[in-house]
Structures are given as C-alpha cells and as structure tokens.
Length: 102
Image (cartoon, rainbow, N blue to C red; front, top):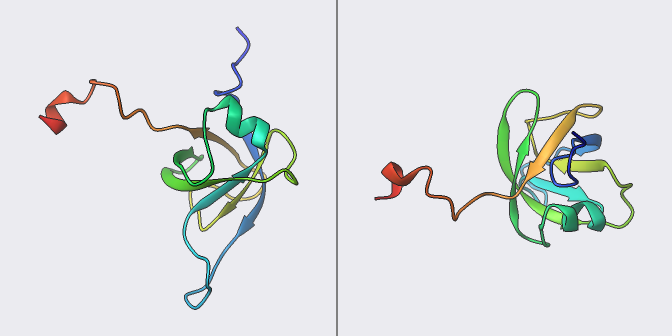
C-alpha cells in the first residue's frame, strides 16, 4: 500500500543549532508548504517530529526554498542531517487517552 502524503517520511536536509544569546531559539521544523498542506499543518502550529532516536514537539515554519520531501530542523535533538523523520500533527481530539484527562 503506498504511503499517504501525511505519513511519508522526510529527509533532514539541514540542522540549525542555536546558542543561548541568539534572538530566535527553540525547536522548529521548516518544510515545503506542499508538505505542510499534506499534513494539515499551518505556520506557527506545533507538530511532533518523530526521529530515529526520540520524538519531540517543534513549531512549523513553511519555507518555499526547501525541497518537497525534505526538512530543516532547528534545535531538534530527535534527528540529524541525513536522517529521516516523520512530522505529524498532534491528535488532540482523540479519546484514546481518556484516563489521563478525566
């Protein structure tokens, strides 16, 4: 079965590591607007970045200079360049974790 656009893994084409004094810091994932649309993600929204070592939340930034199928991450320790990741919209409407929110 072919993977849907929202499930397709993305190649980490670059990584930006910030320092304590930098004006803009924090986890961010930059991706092509078409990849954002396939995953129903909009600018400024949080998304899960599932990497080979762990997963973490990062802010989404659509960037038309990034090729389809690739991402650039900033301050995301879940993945390094040349790794593949999955960027997933958090499911806040599901009741599968009912015991935690009751």
